[in-house]
Length: 197
Image 1: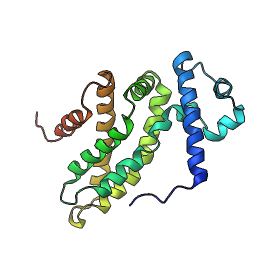
Image 2: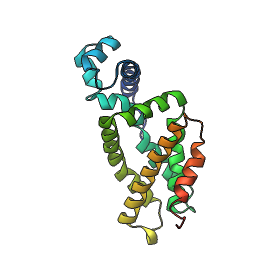
Image 3: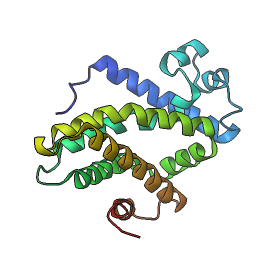
């Protein structure tokens, strides 16, 4: 089931966050993530430091703003998936929805992924986000799994493994500058679970 309709106030807040994130990301690319302060970001965006901090509490969250909806995208795709598919097939297809969402602007997301790879603080914060998404994805997977095969441990392990596949696939795709087909990379990643040796 999709999330409840978003009010105009929340839409306005999202638009402001998107613009602040865009300006900030340009500054990070020019100056370096660790060298930029919130005062620098506020100046670049033409707002006060306190205003900027109302929208983003950390520099990491500014860069990772684009990933905020990913957990919901995966969970919604699981619920909309075919009931006759096994868990791995549904997770693989749900991850493709997430990849499609993320790679709408190839150059931008490749640059973001490059910055994340070079910045330990961003890697750590992205892991925290992934951990935050997992319970919702597990719940949605269990909801759409036959009661006879429903196990919280199995679902948790499968979702954790699938999310790891997502980051490996995105890393490989980014390393190719977006030239490799992400669907093919997903297929290869999930095939690893069923390939012996």
